[in-house]
Image (tube, rainbow, N blue to C red):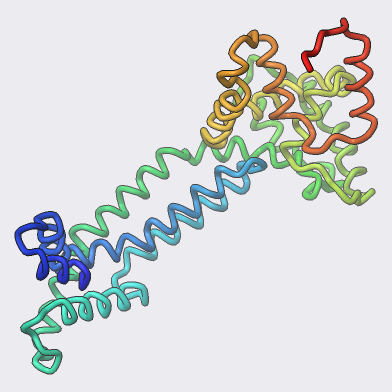
Amino acid sequence: MITLEHIVNERGEESPSASGLLSILKDQSTTFILHSLEPILEALSILSKSIQTKNGDFNQLEKSMLGTLLRLEELKDVSINEYKQIFDIVDKIKTLSSTNLNRDRITRATSRTNEISLEEIFNDKIVKFIDKVISNIKARFESNALKFLNCFRIFDVSEATNEQEYGIQEINTIRQQYPDDFNDDLVAEWKVFRKYLFVQKQQQKSAILTQRQQCINLVKNGMTRDMYPQLSLAVEIFLCAPISTATVERDFSTMNRILTDLRNRLTTEHLEQLMRISIEGPSDLDDDLKDLIINCWKVKKSRKISV
């Protein structure tokens, strides 16, 4: 605001944009609203980052969502420290930006009047905005859907136990959700598969598979897929549920990196294969894989190379 005042004082009518912006920011209510939005947007930013991680799962999503909702409910209380600091900031800005008002002339009654008006603005604008945000979050992440998807937490090796009832309730919930697709074999398959998970936990490998990785392996591995057909189908349903649109956006970004102007003759099949390698392939190539790729190219038809 001080910078804008200098621009207006030096240029006068030649800077209508600066003059208009200054008149808006000089409004105490506008300044208060802008500062009050900062902690709200910060909470939403944390939620957005947590659900856009590549290895995010629904357990993490639920924790992040509940934490965000609690934080937003807390921000509806005007008496918390964040808003006390904002009241002080607004008061200082008003004092510094006013050329005719001396700090010593601000009476206690004037400060109290400003505080009351800002509280009214808070209740009328900020609280209603927070309520709308909370409503949108709850609509976006429906509790019943999250409850169902959290049933697949039983595939998390770190939570596996040797108890007879471990995962039975969750498996029955999945079965009830899709009664036409599953029968009693689903429970029987789970009773066998959970022993495999518990053995993995007992071995305490350095790199234990995450819940999503475990589900992907169950679907991809042909042998385990044949051994647990219904369990594999249930896992496919889980894997088809995206946490956010970030995965789809990454796929489009990958396609744009591969299908450049210099490679516009790539066929759809070739493009799909390159995208699959880029998205699902290993980040580093070991020597065996490098040799396999080189040998594959050696047996291909000889090509003329311009030097």
